[in-house]
Image (cartoon, rainbow, N blue to C red; front, top):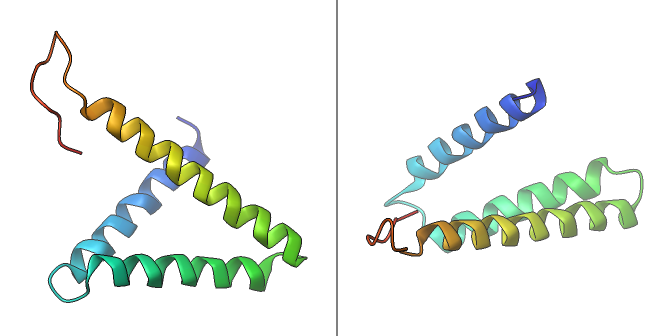
Length: 87
């Protein structure tokens, strides 16, 4: 794994820890709104143009959809492993 990939994996683990801290006190939907709006605000504030900020946000949403599709594919039972893998 590259240094960037390692750093991103660590960053995701930290985000998961933050999400777990909110468990029971902040609804899942509210956490999602807070996170997406925070990072979208960051994109608009740091990108050199609104167009680039929107491309970054769109790319992020596409990646999230792809990650979810991978999770769903991994969760489907198969002949070798008939139990459903929870993600």
